[in-house]
Amino acid sequence: LGVAGTSDFNWTELASLDPQLEQAGYTHHFLDFDGKHEWPPKEVVSEIMDWITFDAMRSGKIQTDRSAVNRFIDRNDSLANSPSLAGDPYQQWKVYRKMKHFLQGLTDVTALDGIISQLEKDPKVLQRHKETEDQLKLEEELRQNYSGLLREPDPSFWKNEAARLKSLADKPAADGKPLVYKRILGFLSLSAYMYSNNSLKQNNPEAARKYVEIYRLVDPENSEHRYLAAV
Image (cartoon, rainbow, N blue to C red):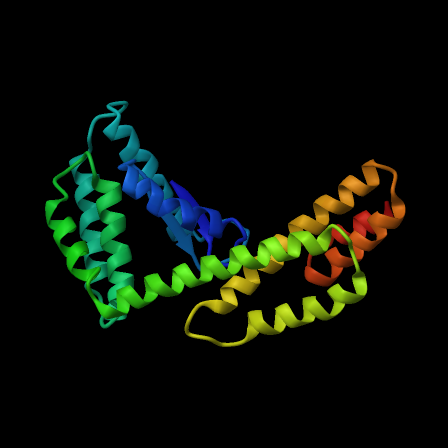
């Protein structure tokens, strides 16, 4: 089971791995939620606990609890057919796919396979899959580009670039591109932290100073850069 917020820099790796695990036939699922690199909301935590419990049932470590399985089915089937998801076949597809992954090995999922197969032909679902592929491709290109630029730190460049990325991250868009830039800012934050820390360990205060400044520019709300600057 993978879990990540849609703005979390780890989301990209998990989203890329998910279809590979599906194709290979592994028992798996990727739960994402609206958030960054942080603890998931309580409703997602509840689903994590469901997965752990169901996995223990699948492996025979605990006895299969049919009432728990049926509650999960009823809850998610109601969600998939709720007014809030009416007209949103992609979100319905996500719910039914989650049901299939959670329930495999515990009950017959043939009916779910049929529903999922039908939804995957929906133009709106196909469009969302295309948008996700485009996001992943763009994000990989940006990571490679920025990784090269970080090797020769230039705070003056990053001052303008961080502002540009933040503007793109805050720009409303229906294609999910703002999430790409939010994840890129998270990636740059982690990278700048690692470069700062390594520079300090290598007794290179000049490089550390530049990386700490980049850290501040890309992630001003994180107080860690203040600690590194003081060191």
